[in-house]
Length: 349
Image (cartoon, rainbow, N blue to C red; front, side, top):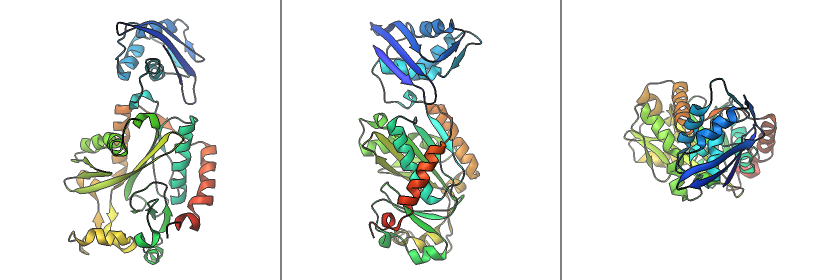
């Protein structure tokens, strides 16, 4: 049985093995990586020999780490990479730990550049040029982010938005419009290989991809739960919503915006649907903020994001990542040519 894994920005790891009565045997590890001392290769091989074929990724990683002699250095690969290659040799994929995740934070970007970056990074993951990643957004300016299938005139009061200095951009995913301003929300995107959710319906994949953030929120004292189809909620009301797009090239974009400290009065002035949604909830002018994350945790927004990152890494693994100059350039071009254009914004008038 043969499995290969190319570390993003690193080296190729190859594992060949047999399975005898459910046990790994005749394990061979090879590749174009670097390893010091060379004898440590036998440590890795021996750590895999005798493991059960049903071993979880975490168990394989732990075995490799435990088996390595003190001072050994794996260069261009890691115990995680070896575990992924083993799982591929066994024909087992489809868990978060089968990938090497990157956690990306960027400076504040314009609204058009944010939605363009989503398309660029999803396609980079689909092509194999980038590994799967989690990206946290920072907003340079206030914006209304319109769902891909919404009517502009039915959803947005453009005159009111102009008075508040709020621009409107349309994203590539479905779902509802949202008002965002610097510091008032927590937005993140997951760029996921399609095989992670390959056997799931859209509805099931929403719950699956949001599970880690529910655990993060619960660890902060919020009684968070998933509400089909795409809401993250609590006993005190909705916290946020998710949207998703599956690309034919094999990647899934899944992004979420959660309210940290939002201005409800402003929202109902610029979003027409907001007026209807709040009309039966007894909302009055005295209600000025929608702040489930702030009020339920009492924590600064940065601390909530820090806990989210820690939770994701503890569950799924992950290392800090960056966006390349080429990806920035591609996103800037797409933002200028598509997402900043009136044609794209008004293609559903």
